[in-house]
Length: 337
Ligand code: AHG
Ligand code: MN
Ligand code: MN
Ligand code: MN
Image (cartoon, rainbow, N blue to C red; front, side, top):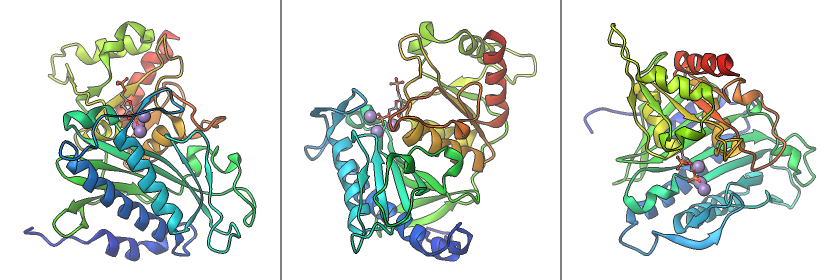
């Protein structure tokens, strides 16, 4: 490295006072996420060499075939957070129900709940394409000293105290927010340290990339079809047509668009009336990051973070990215509804 970067450890200590309730607990929580991410990263990097690719043989609550790495990553994150006894509950895309953690003296005193998509984009594992992890952190709302309840998990996204993702890409990065902007840290695998490589990340207000699974085109609502046509139209000023880029890993698609400017859409379809992405594990954390980076996230009509969740595994249509692009897509949705 030819530049001196701050490490993630130093950054957490330096910015601890910015945290809403600064007892050091949230710092420790983020510390354990970065540790679990290192372990998962090590395993992801070995995919293809050891017997970690392919299906695990089970179906999860989402109706998806679990991949071996889905199971591995889920266990690692849950184990790390449970062992360190810093959260009072965990909900995961891969678990039917939330997990209650009693805490150090079995007294349910820990303040935070974590919601997690342990391995995002798992269909990309076997073909050596980037995958990720997404996490979302809230303060519990029920009384301390009692076991967590479903109400602690069904909070609106606007109550998040922190959220982030890890992208296991050409390099491994952790990108997170505690409500004071978004910062990205790159792992130096030789020494196992993350460095602040992307301070104060911002979505460009406009972009030239649209990311959507166009294989579902026929099933899209008219507003989305019209917006795609708009993206593809040639304009005299050379602003359009936009470029289509879709990896099929939400983390990687959002990460690219945050750096380059773009919009990600997973709309409702005739077969999946609520879309595919999960409000609590995918959309809310990405929405928090997007807004903190000057971007926007909506379900086509309404701000994602204002939606009151009613179920743990709830799905929601998702429009996320550069502010002006999301606003334009919403205009098309409003026109056709
Ligand atoms: P996960 O691997 O956590 O189940 O998430 C998959 C999601 C998301 O990563 C991606 O953007 C989307 O599914 C892709 O879905 P399609 O294959 O339907 O486009
Ligand atoms: Mn899945
Ligand atoms: Mn996912
Ligand atoms: Mn997943």
